[in-house]
Picture 1 (cartoon, one colour):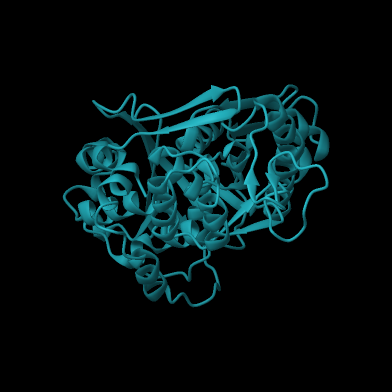
Picture 2 (cartoon, rainbow, N blue to C red):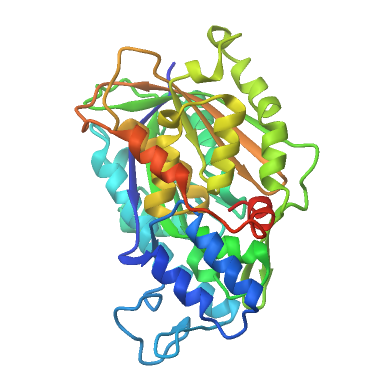
Length: 410
């Protein structure tokens, strides 16, 4: 029995953040030291990001809010609302993203109706409320009140993998199950001005977005590309427990992005992949580059650089991750699903259509998935090599700032 991800759709808020503009705002904050301002410039310019999206409508230079809570446009001042204020906006705007992505995924799942959904699994680490997003989706999409609901919360950037793994388990246990997986993150709710290098790097990377998938083992015809969910693995690295964390503070959630994270990934990525690839005898002994598609969570440009170099992958193989980072930034758990969607939209080939996917998060946890791209698509021709090279090139970082930013994941 094959469990198939039959549709995968994404959604982002309307407010666009242009990276150079955001950089200038952060660099203009009065609490920054001279070194802090230089770090802001270097982190933003070397991020590999051009645009991001935010559910915080105030975070724009277009229209000034009359009574600003997050951003005073007139003074270009980033404000510090309470965690309660931030979470209230999460409940309001996050619900919209959850529902939009879920509806799009259901509409795109040929042969599946709302009444077919048996399970809803939601994922998020950027806010809390109850009844939660799983409930909101059931009501908004008029799903059956008997739908089984699960919420995977506060697991960070790898949260989509436990959700997809759970969906596969439900379908393996019940061939008639139809699972709706929805991830939505509002990371921009928690941005703040700081002289701390880790916080600065986080501010240069994180963004808002949502992704949803419909997963089932039902025998239905495919009218486009899809993914079979073949195998999942979880690995905890022997070091790094304190290197990446997500804590709740009085003025929002506080990201801990330790200076050693890229090195931990570099040192342990081979070991993290071993149990995944060992699950398929056909992959024994092959070079990593022989697996055609790689859906890597773009935690930051330096992390992608480490993965590409360590595994000997090509620029084309990292293009889906780099393009996602460039166009959307790091949307925590939803991001790797954007990368998978990029891969699904690529033109079909006659070669190896296996997909190896990875995400990294608190712990330090490495989640991996082995998938197979099936079906055909008439997607646009992809001149990905040039785009990938441009995204990888970035800008020159001053020599005295390179150790700080490279260690912090920029």
